[in-house]
Length: 264
Image (cartoon, rainbow, N blue to C red; front, side, top):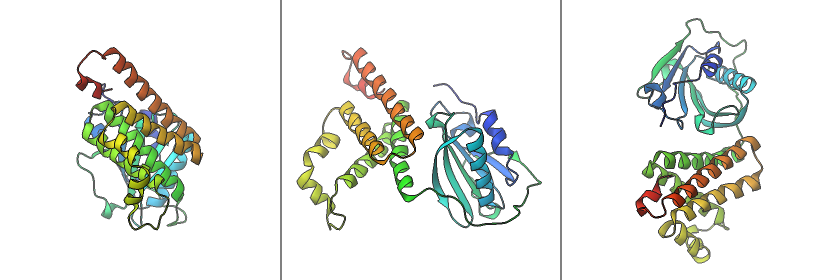
């Protein structure tokens, strides 16, 4: 897989015009130049005004690139952390950025300083209130982002990580099948009504059929919720491209060993 640059120049400029950021660190695979086409952008911004810094960055990214989805990672009295998906970038290149107070910042391993401003501004009016997505949108993004991680790990042939995401899908599917939220043993309810479904998804069955079911679950959720249309359409496109490549690969190696079918 081809290596990627730590951060696109236009994005770097947009982030570093923020007058409230004192230091900006990059971490993860991009910090070591070991990223690939599926690597997201992991950043830590040190600031005395996390709320103002996050507001400024969110508005700048939306104005310059167009934000199609925002997911809150953390939000408390010393940190605001978001995931931003931009319309002009691959969904795999989401920006994870945490804005935190200097005395509360814990840098991630391999963090690298990429920007420093010793003359930061203070907002005219300090506020502890900041925007956040609704619970419905947050939960919706949990499912769709998990499905994107699954596809990413499958492309990379990181099968244990893919399994972790698939296991999450099974739990999400189970919750969607449970009719009584007050049931003391919800899984017994599933045993009675949906036993055949879990057999095919977990204990047996063709891998491609399992992944097709995962895709159908995601698509059904998108059709029902009608949220974040550009982001949602992008997720479906990622899945369709992945499944199409898998079908093509299965066709050309149909006479090869079964173990080869596990890599898209």
